[in-house]
Length: 442
Image (cartoon, rainbow, N blue to C red; front, side, top):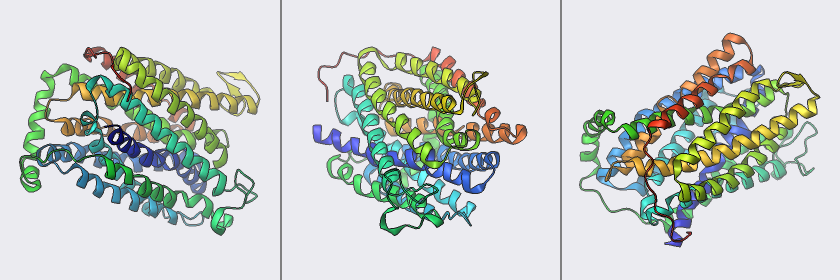
């Protein structure tokens, strides 16, 4: 069982660099810089993520329903892995003189869709790994392991590939493999590097995680029944107040969290004038705190339950999101400060967001295990993906609209605060199950 658990952990390790390197700290800030105007880049990126989120929201629960009936989880994950690798690899062509914006957004979307679909299916495999009382620990350790993977990938990227204005990496070296700094090749390689990382480290997952039992029907028959069964599950939601409240809460707060992750680096580039390297160092800090508090949050989850961890994390994120717009190169909370102190404050806020986000995501996954209907776990995580993506367009869209109307990135980031608060309110109606004390640590 320990080997199976570690195999399952490796999915988080393999997939995390997409979020760390592409969504947050390297590629998105790079696109913001080469597009030119920070507000325009933030708006374009917001619209692109909104379209991708809509695709994930529509298809995830349907695919989950099919898998619950037909099985074949590992085959589905293999297909989604190919999407991840292909999409990430295509980002190489986002050259600074001609970024191919439509192509780049399409490749980014394909890779993100593959990652999200695969995540839905791997999450559904959790109950087969250990006893129920260990789920919090396993979920937290998995997120922490993933953050460490993302951190190592980020350090490799900054140390050996991504170059500054002098053409040198963070270690003072020219980009590896003779990559030309003039064409930003050392930064553009982040796409293929992310794809290669995933292709290599997903192998332990497929080697050690056993396939769940086969379903009671074939894929075609399950596909034909997917929509009627999903529609019936959705019709039952109003009578399942706790599940409905949790899905609604996660819909809002995960959308807000993804918005902060997606636009934090873009904000730092556009408002504080950071270079990609500074954003990368910011990412290292956030990854360290994310790993630590995902692990600690998982242990707190197993001891006290998921609900207290979720509430504490959300309160922290609300406070952080309220402070971010007050940080400019010359001010903090409306008080004049030096540019150095403003940058330091943004680093601290990034560490808080990483810590709270890591614990929030790990405990959200555990809570979904307790809320899902028996025998419909993959569909449940499909609905969980739906709740995370049904309004995944909302934060990017609201940020895009607010930024475009105001012409200010600072004002554009404000909608995430309302989304966090809405999720916090809905948690009031989520029934927290009584979790037995863990008898062992996996």
